Length: 110
Image (tube, rainbow, N blue to C red):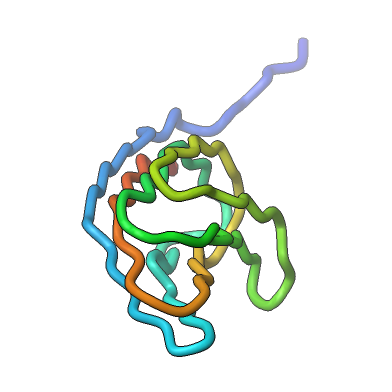
């Protein structure tokens, strides 16, 4: 008779972070708003709220230097996201003052 042996179930941890963001760009402003210092094997959900500004912003999700996804957000709007296995999130703006809020819930196994 064969016995199936499996690994011990590991705990799934969820961390939630919410922060205000603010970028003042000359011709263009770029800011990394989140860097994954855990593992590459994470999944995340969250939102980016764009409250102050007059031009669209671009939110880009990277895995190292590779672009996984980009979201364009208009002033006064909020965009939700779900993404896996990323290393950083960056906001790119045009000139002027741009402000909002960033919230992310990261799930990973220990």
